[in-house]
Image 1 (cartoon, rainbow, N blue to C red):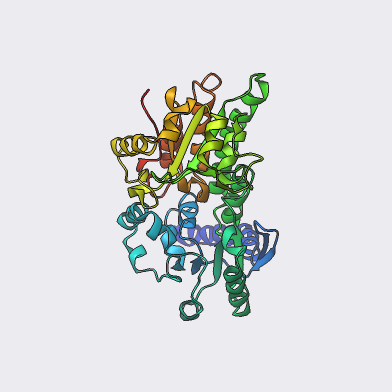
Image 2: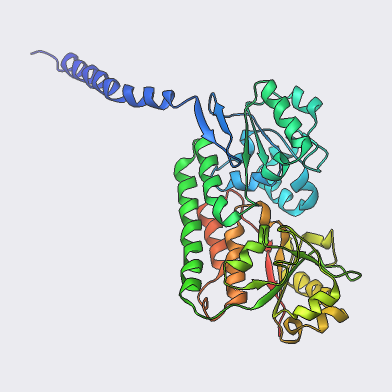
Length: 378
């Protein structure tokens, strides 16, 4: 009686050969996707020859963006800027706790962001650089881009700041394409767009105007007031159908508005922005900050004559926000906070805390802990 093993072995080899034939076109297709050419945030066509493995981050805040689409964003880094570490050391520490190797990633500047060190970059074997839009607008940033490209390092520019409501989903999709994380990036982009559409749709159906708003960056006891214009976080006022009192009075980014002008406008709502520890003002809010600290320091920020005279403070419509929402894709949480503060009649069911919790659960490689928005108790 013949043994069955040779026949079974032959069938097994035939199956392997068939699978190889079936699989080969897909493997070849995946390999053929590189090099790729993408259009970055400022409209530049950039060709990237191979999947990036050693990336330079011109702004450390863009590590947050990578962490929403990649399970180990630190593994991608060859070097990075110290701006996030300097401005928000608490969020830096949260990343180091999850990814200790981040502490050893070389800094490519002094923490100021635009001043990228050519000497340091030269020592790093990078295959891609990612700059923020505000860096690409500076002379130092332009020089850095020219230098990197002259050494064969492609540069892409991303923008989570200028027209954030329009640009954030597109830039997440851009990073997803570049880092072969398209499915995760698409999920986050749709998550963002669905929540933004809810705000836009309800505002469009309302015939009532929103309130007048003053949004002050880094409030200080001895001056009034650096007010956001209609750009950056100022967009989040307009999307709710409310009016920014700086509109028409200040440039798009914003600027100083004197006390007399603020009192004459008499805003219905006051929003202050700042960072952890009150580095740039007495108001402390953001990563690592307890709610009690944020509320106490916000109350101190409005404890001055000009603020006590306006309707917003008299009526208890005083709020605070982490300033650096204007640098990261988490800004959809800020949009929901604005909606709930400015139009509570339209958005009684909008809960930014639930949205942030879902981001932590579904997307974030590192959970976002701290107090990112606060309201004074009436």
